Structures are given as C-alpha cells and as structure tokens.
Length: 293
Image (cartoon, rainbow, N blue to C red; front, top):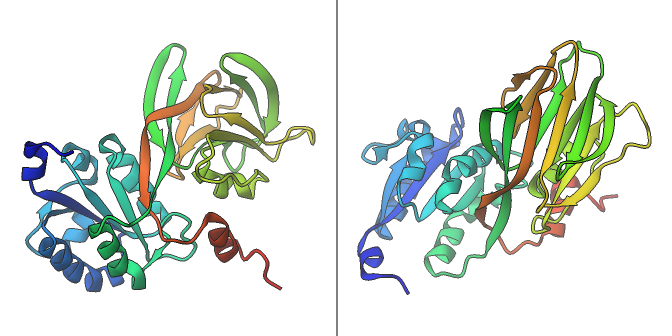
C-alpha cells in the first residue's frame, strides 16, 4: 500500500522523442493534454521541448533524478535504448511508441497510443521486465568506464584492420581464444540485434541468460555461446595494431588497446516495458517476416 507521502505527491511523466521526426510536432500537444488531464506533471527532454511550451525541460541524463511514474518514448528502438539507460536507476515503466520501421522494442504503433495510455491509467496494461548488463572497460586494474547496456556490448576491429585475437573468460575461467572480426555480448533483448545478424540465436526476452557471439570467426568450430546471466563475462583484447573499439548499444565506439578488458555482468537494475497483448512469437513473425510465402 502506498504511504500517505507517496500518494500525496503528483505523478510525474516524462516524454522523450527522437530528433528529426516530423510526426512528433503533431503528437506531443495532444499527448501533453492527456497526461495533464490524468493528473501527471510532465517533463520533457530538449528534443520534445521544441514542439511544446509549458513543461519543464530536463536533459535525458538528469531524468533519473526525478521520481518518475511513466516515460513515453516517441521514436524507434534507438530512442528507447537511450531512454532505458538513463532512467534505469529509478525502475520506471517505459511506453515505447514506434515511429520507425522495425521496432522490436517500440512495438506500440501510433494508432494504439491512447488505448495503451487508457489501459495504463486503468492498471491493466501488461508490463514486461527486461534485464540490463553492467559493462566495465578496464585497462590494467583501472576502470576506464562503467556503462549500463540494454542490447549488447561489441568489441570489434575497425574497417581496415586485420582479425583481432580475443580471450574469453566466464567467472574468471578461461574458455577459448577467438581470432575474429569481433565479439558480441548480448542480453536476451539484444539477441535480435547485431548478434542475430552474426548468426546468434534468438532468446525470449524473459530468459535469464546472455549470448556471446563471435563475429566472422576464423575457426568454423567457434559458435555462439549461451550462458546464465548470473555469470561474469570477460573479453580480453589481444591486438598489436590497437585498432579495436568497444560499442555499447550501437553508440559510437571507444578506442581499445592491447590488453584491455571488457567485463559484463547482470545489472541490479531492470527495464520495465509496457507491452501490447501480442506475444513474442507474433512479434517475430511480424518483424522478421517469418512464415511468409
């Protein structure tokens, strides 16, 4: 039961939008009206602020400092990935409205925006819990950066480089050396992203596992590996050319040097997504065109 203090405060909703989408200008004013009529105080990111006056403007990176009750994401999967990372600390449910094309995460079409909002208001909208990874970049014993990752962490060579060597460790136990273009560590959500293109398996989003997928390995016996999400995964780069990089959720890469390590484990935070009634296999058939003749 909510405490008197929590029930007394007004609900807070955030709107996060994808840049350069003309539909946003038409959507946001009506969305703002609906949220305010249903008792929400609304904050918006700078992209959304271009299309509406009145709401407080808050940088995405600062939104987790607010006690959010709802985040509406207008855009594609990239926008939702960004929103999930910056709001993960407050475990707020996200409603992803698809203004893109593929939309594995932002599966709610624009025509279903208000029916979904009504379902949320009535407490009958299904929420799905998705795992996040915590990934650290280490050089020696120094942590150069620590990152939340929703889809995947990719250690890859640059376009002109030769194959790199990677050593894989699971819970500090050596697994194998890989000579390959790169290595992918993906969450179940990320199993339908780059890992899938590299020949990895599709995992149901609620499976408690990670996928480790080599990219174009030199040895045909090196195959994707599925491990429990309770383990710690470490990839050690062996490259004399210093032409590798680390990309997180498809963001611009971080330069790596020989001996650098990428360590991934399950985060203490999860992502909570409002979903439609469509099941996962219906989504796969729709997005990947399975079963079409």
